[in-house]
Length: 188
Image (cartoon, rainbow, N blue to C red; front, top):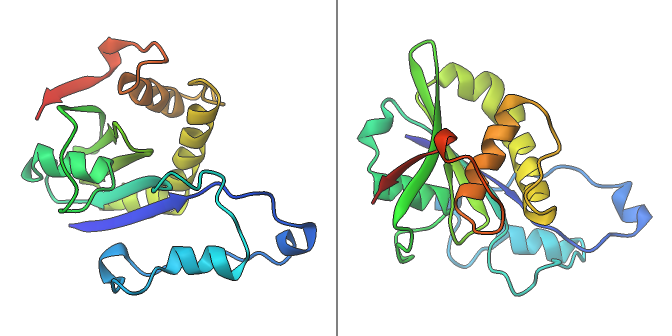
């Protein structure tokens, strides 16, 4: 199993001279971060960036998981992945809301988080992960998610996948109506 996490946090608008000098930084994997080091916090401090939601303890997260067989991953662990939770976090979700697609016999499952601003994609397709999901779609889906959260459930696309994701995300909230026929629900 290989896990990759994409993180996005809203910050106050930096000055123009700061914006012109920005470069993308790669942070070490979550499991490899020693407890005394917080690279994301250090990145914010180093650039004098202030989070817009300072009282919220999580950024927006899209967790990508590559596995041989989705069914080999317990529903409880899939839920933890969708919430970007560690082993020490309590399990509060009572069901798993997801959509699933299949390409060349390999399944991909998109799972919505509940109380957190996160979601997960679990795929059996190494090719899909390496050529589409990791280089492009992961960030794009995270941007759609941010728009969904801040624009009353709207998704700025007429393409099928973003619309399906918007419906999935709406299924775990109570403010936006959704089509129940397009979401699978399994009790934990």
